[in-house]
Image (cartoon, rainbow, N blue to C red):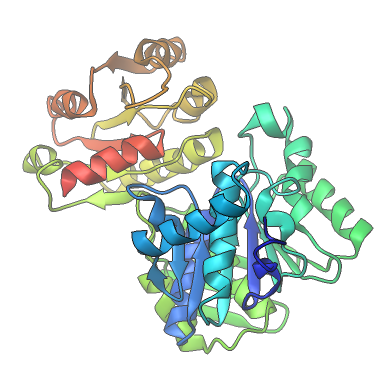
Length: 396
């Protein structure tokens, strides 16, 4: 299909190609905000979307409109009607990005990396591997080393690879792949690092230490994601002044990443009790572990009953997700999703077996009513992009 379209993937502005299990969307959001603060025009292909498919396509800083996207889809369907939906989306992104001038292109893999359709990119400027954990095991393999091998498949000879902090098993695979093909590695904790210090974000490379604001996105895990974005743009030698790094880190937005609900009707009953509501699209064990850490930090600041509303798609691992919340959730309310979900009774049984107080509700709105029975609760809605989208839409 791309050959028939004139190989648009080979004619893009400098590309940063991003793979990993968790943190891809946040890292891209930080890079986008930093680059735009530097005055650069940026293309972005990311996934999944919350409300509209067009959210996956940012063309020179502007979300693609439906008419443009439909026209691209029709061209692709005429050329290659056999493509899967995701393959067609990738082709559409390359087509749209090739036809609109920009300074930088940010491309997120769909799943894995080695066999992902975005991996037709032959010579990206930079590759990034975010945190790798267990997810999509049915497609990528049962163990961390199998999954790491897929993710490391985006590395290219001579192309710098910026890699987040990893488990030893993952790091060894990535290092072996990089050595085999000749990809220069820049590993967190070795060649660069990011950490919070005195209420600031410090990003240290081999040549300098940047003193930056704490990231706009909540959660300690965003320290690493913001650092990964800064390190990648720094190692890539893009024209980014220091004030743009600071502006981007403090202004980045990424919906449904530990997002507080503070003004709408959906969260109003909880807020009226003196409570708070958070939404996160995290749906695997590493994401749940990051959320658990965030909940414990919040509880240290303001002790409150912590109610976690969980809805998950059928292909996900409820036991590992719920298990990671042990000790951080006082009560789990399991709910169904709008499509192909794990039965709430199964999620509740899993939580109960782990010693977590639990219940079920027939809907997200009913779960919120149940959560309002607790005094000034802290409510976290998580487990799926579908559920996050429902909460954000209800909030208005």
